[in-house]
Amino acid sequence: MQDQIATIFAQFKTGTQLKSFKAFGSGHINDTLLIESVGDTNPDFVIQRVNHHIFKDVPGLMRNIELVTNFIRSYLETVPGSDPNKEVLTLIYTQSGKTYYQDVDGNYWRCYLFIPDTNSFDKVDSREMALEGGRSFGKFQSMLAGLDPKLLTETIPFFHDLEKRMETFRDTVKRDPVQRVAKASNEIQFVEERAEELLQITRKINNGLIPLRITHNDTKFNNILFDANNHAQCIVDLDTVMPGSVLHDFGDAIRTGTNTGAEDEADLSKVAMDIDLFKAYAEGYLSEAHTFLSPIEIENLALSAKFMVFIIGLRFLTDYIDGDNYFKVHHPEHNLQRNRAQFQLLKSMELQFDDMKLAIKENLSRFAAKCPV
Image 1: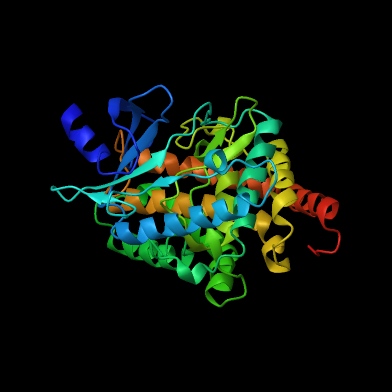
Image 2: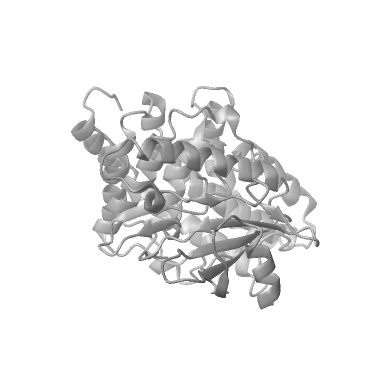
């Protein structure tokens, strides 16, 4: 194994050799290794085997990452006090100048410069962390606002397209392949009662009213590296960076960052949206994003949180009815349990929706009174 990894590492222009390696991170899609290099003054590196079964167009994905990281780096180089090697991922090219190496087995590998002295967190446990998270993703989008989304490849087509998801859901309910519809009747009714309100976001995106921008599309808090002082430093996991709506990024950060329970929490009494964390994230996000957001994006920020909870819950429910073919499950009712936890979170948001909209309006007025809500 050491020789195999050393051979792969040698394909990249690192200026050093492998001393040792170990598994790194908590991701479930790609295999990630931290490489300790030879020599005390040489930096360490991260190499990843990209899961080409999930990401069908790895060359396109890597072009996206190259475009985005180079664009951000060019911006940071103009900002006094910035350190691009710490604030944006640094791609290491292969000896032949490519962004990835394909081995004899057809596996795709990439290499990044390792960013030391950082931490990531799976759970948001303070207002300060939520504020930093919002600021970090807002800055990420703001830095990319000048890059044409048409230059990027759509790595996962129709990823957050609720019209497509509803078509699949209704077809699955109609087929009822494993006779689970009866057990999920309440959840199916829940979907149909709310679909029309939330479909408006997808329709406004598809008809061009909500603009396409370059978005991250996986805005979990563990995709932010924090420095030793718990200040957000760098956004990572760029595999899903592609054209999309900022509403998806904002909404998914709220979905994952403000939930008081686990994504698959069985005790629904533990599941709610923490409004204080929502307010803090919105404050941090708008402190950076108010400079480029359009009025229609601002108008739909609060709704986007409900949208993302709904679409993820819908996907869990669809997979449950379909026989658990997509998400890994630990027991037969796992996807239904996940769905119920998401829909409980949505109910909590519905009860606090006026407060959510007010928080957006109040925070926005602090940064850009000229922008209407």
